[in-house]
Image (cartoon, rainbow, N blue to C red; front, side, top):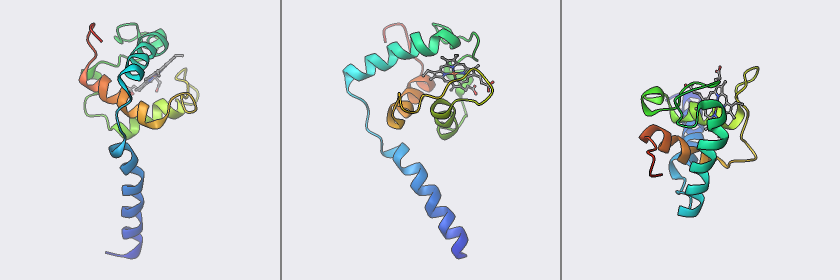
Length: 110
Ligand code: HEC
């Protein structure tokens, strides 16, 4: 493998690794995050996440979208669009956990 390809493969694994290695938030923090999802994110994406000003965030809508791309949207926002950046408010591992929950689906019991 040319050195350059090896270097970029190494770089890719360094970028992806923290996402995979992240531990789940504590149960108390998980409830806070679900609350934030419904109320803060829900103010644009709909209380039931079926869409509003922002697109729907139900499992079928996020299916097949890479977690890294979704994490980048949530952390950095979408410039020029209403989607705000959450970096500084939500650490990366919590964002990754939220994406997992969105992709799995959140039911009313959560
Ligand atoms: C002020 C309104 C607003 C808030 C608050 C908001 N969003 Fe968004 N969000 C948007 C808009 C508008 C878009 C579409 C951006 C575009 O046009 O590309 C978006 C896009 C997204 C996307 C990409 C969806 C896709 O199908 O590509 C995700 C994921 C997302 N938001 C998650 C969140 C999460 C999680 C929160 C809370 C932590 C949140 N958003 C809070 C307005 C908002």
